[in-house]
Image (cartoon, rainbow, N blue to C red; front, side, top):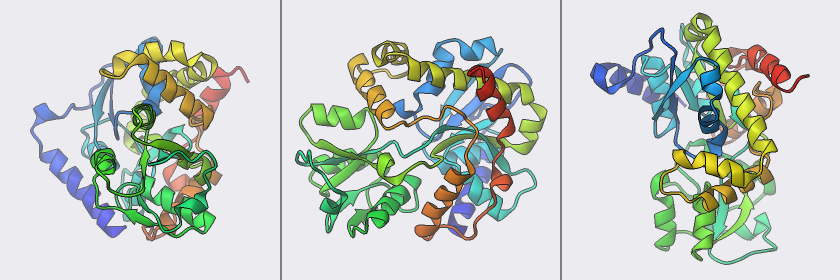
Length: 332
């Protein structure tokens, strides 16, 4: 864990040293600068909040940048390169453990379970997790939440398998196609497209097995939250409305509205991906994080040997605004 914190802080220092033109800076205009951990259909409600005009209704324009990893996203927040970080809350936990006068706080959650699917080389309609005994699996980098969640799922089932951590996340599918490992975890639309091409078969949802966990969340420095309550509230309201829309609207309709955010991905593929995430109940309705899910996340990190100490829910998470907006949007 110490290495993770050092990496985060070093990245923040480097980010702060990058020329001004390469990083958007915070201003008092209506622009909200969000750095996302990666760009994925898994985060569909965020993009739809923009595409459906919900952000505009709040007087907000979003500027979205891709961090390419939770460390980089948190570094952008710590350095002031982004107003909001959108990544796994473990990044905020590591900073809280290290100590900070202005530690980022999680103020809203979007996904509530692992969004990856386990892909094998043969069809296994009667797949059991015990089928993984002694097998090699590509599940992400060591210490990353996808890999730690998969380890946790195996432990829960009492299965002993070999997890290959040597392949970078964005190279896993190519490595699997090249013959590495017996199974590979893939997010949508990659998993469905891979299966449609006859290259592999989806055998299980990792998220369904590992249970509810705060997988991807919105966070900002406490000082930013204090100074910009309207923007924080506007983001929460816009995304909550988009989540409601996705869950209540046919996936074919949603896919067409999502298409501008995914150049090169067909509407048919987006529809399949949306259906996959609806089937595993991937998104929260109330963006206020549950303490039970937060503790499960710490169980997962602790089980992987990556947690120096547990933090209390209140050290990292704010829920009041998100819960109030959920009640407003759903008329409760």
